[in-house]
Length: 471
Image (cartoon, rainbow, N blue to C red):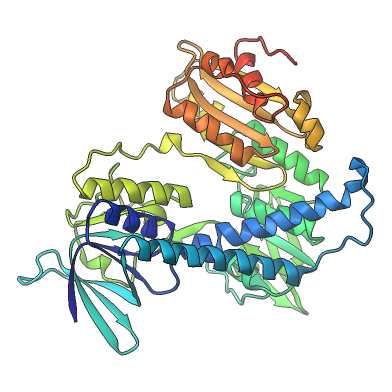
């Protein structure tokens, strides 16, 4: 059976379903193709379930220190089956919500494997075939948006899901390992290190580079390293793991890593691979579209509106190097508005908030101090510790700081970096400041309530000019 649509979206993850809904709102006839469940990796195997685990871990930690707040809580213990049950409930609730939004907006959803059919005289842009069992649908399109996402990298290390795991496997696992090696100290690796540590798992993190969180500001990364070490998480940087050395013996995983001039052996009950993700671009006909180009890492090359070199094809999200669910959603809206003939602002990567949901949280937007200096900006920095913020003391979360990087000539905010309580929520204020091209002086003039965690931005902004009040 054949159907005709203005736009077909391949992939129903965060970017795909948001793009589909926005297209329908703009009056376009939109089809969404998803072989699994709408919501994609973020909802079912990524952002939402891991943050649910992290919330349980955070609450467990808070209850164990309740005597600090004058509360006697006896018999506090972890019910991991209960953690998993709550997580499943949260995911299913959101899944039903996404399904309802697609129906409400009139998006036609095809469940099955979608593949691009090459152009022909009858279909100059090509078709999308959708196969589900022995049933096949053919979808004609004016434009197609590729939103097929990414999958965990494995470094060619055999994954069995129990002893050697990806993050997908770790979420599917019904129990907790007694100890774990985590390969990779980016956001995924550090979030799992944080929640595992709170759940009572002995954690060792191995990172190839000389520091954790390589995308974050140097001082922020160093502070998280210090705080995680204080929580008895072992972190080994500069560790070059030999993939061929990974083996399972006697119910444990063993591997070797070169650390400096020394070859060290590490062992644990499980190994979690958190070395990044790779785009899903093969196996559905995209390789036959010769005008679509890729970068060295295999990500689809797009412009600020999501256009590829093929005029019929757009790409958004992880498959185009987005790497974050909120980036995929934002790019999806931009792509659909561009297809509909609107004039959206092109995607601005420098305004993307980056969040790491460890304890304490890390969040940032804009340039790090070293990036700003490398770009030639004369830099002025303002820092302020949480210990100087009354609400942080009330909350019992005083580790970390906020840091504002500003242009010394114009005062413009170039980057904001936070490690501490509610950082992933508070960073939205910094994002608005970046959007409005605010100066540090303007950020400092915002009247904030007291006591509130947001006061730290005012103090850090005033610290740029050496006039923080409570420091």
